[in-house]
Length: 187
Image 1 (cartoon, rainbow, N blue to C red):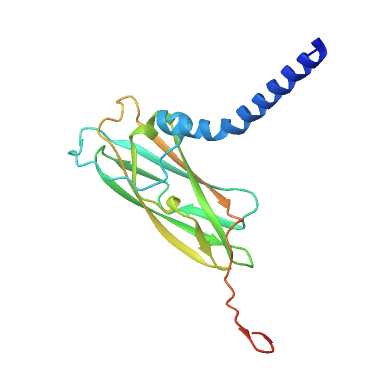
Image 2 (cartoon, rainbow, N blue to C red; image 1 turned 45 degrees about the vertical axis):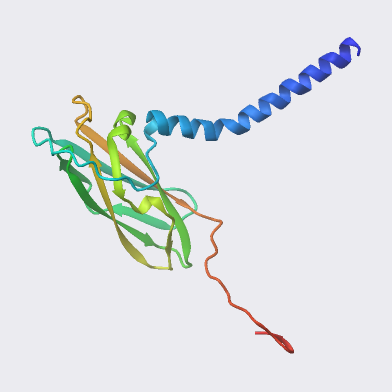
């Protein structure tokens, strides 16, 4: 093998390794964020409530922010923008989805927590964010969030902000059409 062939081979191997690394980076980053709580990533499945006693000596302000991503004519709003909770207590807050579009569609609310360290102490028992939502044109849906901040939330955290961003889900069928084949054609 000549020096030029060796250089070309090494360059192709390096480029291939860079492509594989770039392709794997997003899922690896998501796993890393979930494990460490960095970037406010939170669990996307229901968690069991921690049965610790309630720390009534502390009060934490939890703020809620909602946003709609591009491409979805929906609005997501929280009915209580802010609540004050004691660590260890379960709290329920209601949200409302409204489809302002002229057709049915699917959407998903993706959460994040700030400060990101607080995501390690946020337990969502019930959340609309665990699954996609389907709304008909003009439909409004109220959905609860039941959460708990655990008692071991660091003392320096006095305010936690939970942000939900609403995104369209394009790969869901809007309706299933049942058809059957009969002699002479399709009905």
